[in-house]
Length: 512
Image (tube, rainbow, N blue to C red):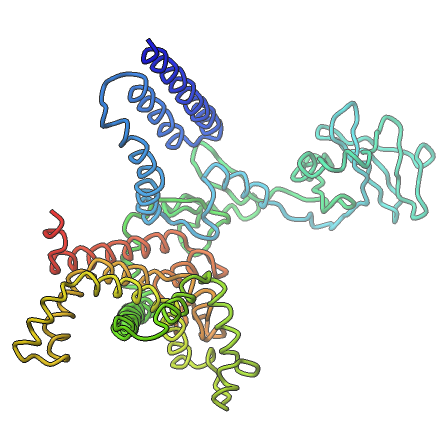
């Protein structure tokens, strides 16, 4: 009887928890649909269906354990990878960020210019019959009028309240905005065109001035092009996310929009010397950096592990001290080392009695990066090497010593091969991690030094991930499409190297 009661209570709790999660996901799906994020909304609805079927029915017991991991893997690993693949095929950069519909609206707003007369007015924002209006003053003429979206109403000075500069601040049937209403005035008045005459309108410059302007560009929806009303020039969709002149592809209207260019970003990596040259240089340094880091940290960690594997006095104290760099947050360590390498005030130059510009010379900057990463990485390899050494049967080394092998031969023929077999997955993982070690490069050198005057993006210590970050976010022209293409290449490189190394080391066969 008590068993049945506990079962019913557990079922009730399960239904409550599942209902809570499903309700949250449905709320998020509704929000995603409202913002036209249909892919996200569809995924959330599928997640709701799978969770409901898995936990409220007996369709599959194993799925109850796997479905949370599958959904999280899809949302945070598979989804971003697919999005990166999709964006790598788009012209997606500064000037081509928004959608085509938004770009058309922006071009219309920007497609105006002041009238040849150059007339400007002092204005007061307000409303007429609840609709946006401006009270305009030309103190030189003087001329006063109210302008709405539909009409222009002339006024006489005697009916107005003027300030000390002769600018009208109150008028009949005109209600000025209060101080609290100014908080929403930007959304209501910016981009609004107030009537001046049949050809021209008044465009606001801030909240205190209006300029008589005219529309230069007109959008023709039927033909999907813009027409210059002054010159008659036609700007058509160039298929790359911009409206451009047919006989001058460089004459484009801005902003543009995200448009598919398929494999052009990938071809630019090979054919465009401005991209190819820095990318090859950065790739070579990335491989060298990752290899040197793994070799130096593993060598030092193993050396210390071998030294402290022998019974010596104070061994526990030494081990605790060696683990301290690993226990300290890496961000703090990197920033501290950055200060220590300072040319004028750093501890390194003070101890060596030199004035080396560590972060101004490419070679010294690379040495500094390797040294700092050695400090950050050797405790990890010391720990895993110590554990691995203790896992190697001592009988093997004793038998080799009896057969006449010296310590060097025992290490080279027995200890090291067994260690490499045990630690191969960790060495590969360390290489993959340092291949994308963004924090170290960004915080220590910023990828520099580099010649910014020549427009260089890639610095001497930039690795692929930091170079990609600069392409996407770190320069005046943010090329997210090209950065996505390079990111996908990085992913394929790391995955290929890792799979090849695992296959050659036969680790997967060992655990199969």
